[in-house]
Length: 206
Image (cartoon, rainbow, N blue to C red; front, side, top):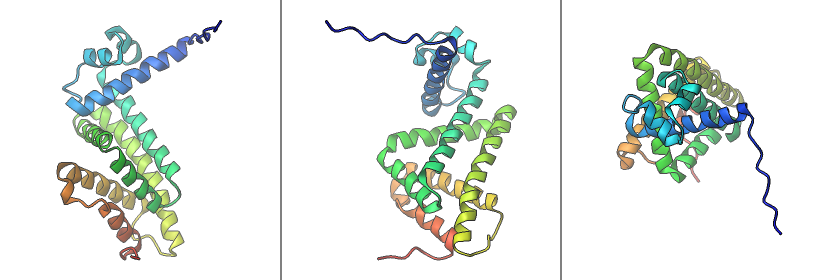
């Protein structure tokens, strides 16, 4: 006779974390599809499989959830940068590969990113949190830039975090153009431009 496995009972903290994660996942999809202001608390709770009461047991309001979601997404970006390797060529190639393989997911992620940006412009509390996470991202990319220039034995032409801001703006701008008109942005344009920025010359061709 086959004995059914005993399902571990979640602690209160584990159950709360599971509910919170499900609400964040639901909000992530809905915000990308219909915007922060176009999404209700009820829609988030229903999509996550929970009640309105469960939402308010985890978040004070929709803006509080948005701030938590922004933090989680920036944490994921920083972890990805750390996994991809120690130089910007690895980071560029990794982001491009992810964009090519999961185009629809990439589209959703970019729409969400733009929604974060718009909400940061509109809501002061969101702006404060968003800029704090942006500063962490610039610092992380800036560290890679410093290492890149040191390996090339070249002085930085500007502070590393300013160059990091340029790389982030370049990525976001090209992604926007590519999603609107894929033919306008070749798949290797980001890597090419990043190489020019870091070395002052185009990459060698075989």
